[in-house]
Length: 336
Image (cartoon, rainbow, N blue to C red; front, side):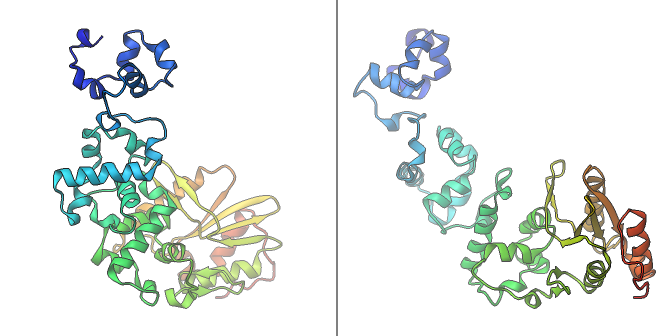
């Protein structure tokens, strides 16, 4: 086989693949060696090659952090990479060129996860050229990113509530799209998830507390929330209690309210900034939300627009609730 494929003996570990062996009818022999070209070759030529000579490694090899650490440090030292340049050097393409596909597979195709495993807490995600696809889908990655970001900048508990959209627009805009997608643009949710050891009070984030203890983001939301709590008959009103994933746009939606009553469920959304020229992204995302919520067979969508509330008050909200089948107290006040 080596003669036919014109492979020099010293190149066997790097050039002989499982596909090649199967092509040359070695499949039965491979089965005796767990379908591993490495084990097969070492059996045929004992003491001729070391593990370092092979691109592929034995099953479970990359689960041992000692092996991961050794190969990464050897690569960094061999290439003379400065400590501060490691995140920019360690790309997916570089690792694949080094024949470390198996290592990448073990760490979900993410050089960031590999470097974090080898040098825990040393680098943060902001130092890498880019994050791999679906990196932010992992809550652990999102938490680690913020904790490392804050640790490297000396941001303590007192400063955390001030990390809002304006802060990241100035200091690290790449985080904004992640928070928009996975926390529905609510930075306080990311902070509270990332630092569970701190007991934050709602007022630290300028949040408001409804009469039932649930949190609201604005005075208008607070008024609507308290109205729903008082007037919905024998139903459950839950604020931001569930998440939906819009796979088409890779976005996570957290409804303002979900109401359950008599075996039915409604999503109620207040789009307070809809149509704002200052926040074009808000209106575009609101349109995607409405389209997505309308597609949910188990829910009925009720949309409250700014003019519905600011100009018409609760009278319009009462009309929306009743017309969509929600039972409310008949004595409820229609005055704001």
